[in-house]
Length: 142
View 1 (cartoon, helix red, strand yellow):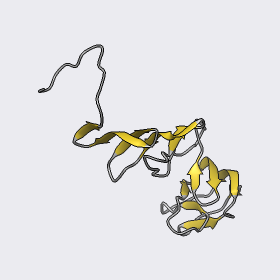
View 2 (tube, one colour):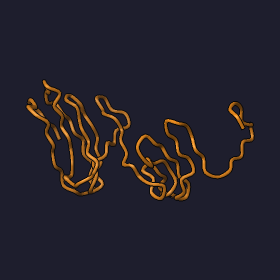
View 3 (tube, helix red, strand yellow):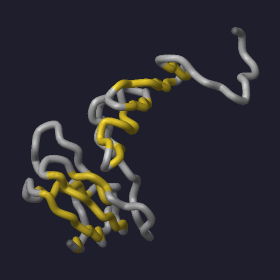
């Protein structure tokens, strides 16, 4: 999809809520910083914003619009849905309950077999379970 012209306000383009891949080229000028957002229109679903003079590869999972860029000239940021420990947003095809997810605001989680084992936030790292540190652990108070 190619969009041209001058944006006079923020524009949201509603796409069909079906699984599909889109390449969006926003060739519009945005003198006031106006945005072009792609959405399925579903309440609470993720959307993707393509800046003026930008290009993005987007994937629609029939609800959310996700940025599928890996490396593309003019590409935008890569975003994931929050996910959960049982269904992490970045997972493995052969083990979909192992991966990374966002357990809450300002937090980064890692799950294995549906169980959150690592929780990282601005205060540090919390690990659930025991560890095997063959090289030792240095620093801190134990």
